[in-house]
Amino acid sequence: MPNVYIVNKGCHDYSKAEGYGSLVYLSRDMYSRFSTGKIFRVFREQMKGSSSDDYILISGLSVMSSVACSIFAAKHNRINLLLFNSGPKLEDHYVQRTIVMEDL
Image (tube, rainbow, N blue to C red; front, side):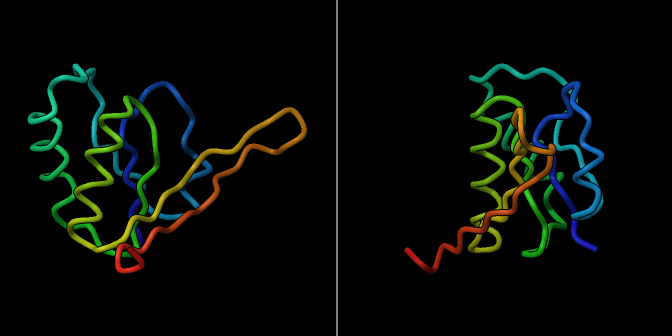
């Protein structure tokens, strides 16, 4: 079963993402957006066992999502994203998007 790497735990309910895989929180603490080296080291360790079938669920600081996606792309030559979609006339759900780097 794939993993869903959630960039930052925050206070959101991520239970609907469980249908895509096991939830793995890359961070639970607050980080300064300027602590890019620390974010990289923590995320690199958390994503050491990742596979090309796993997902990145975007949350938290944009720099944290950027670092997570960069690590994933460097390891797997692709990015599999889970993006939250909600709206007044929509049922809340996640949308999958994949970018394959060899398409560059």
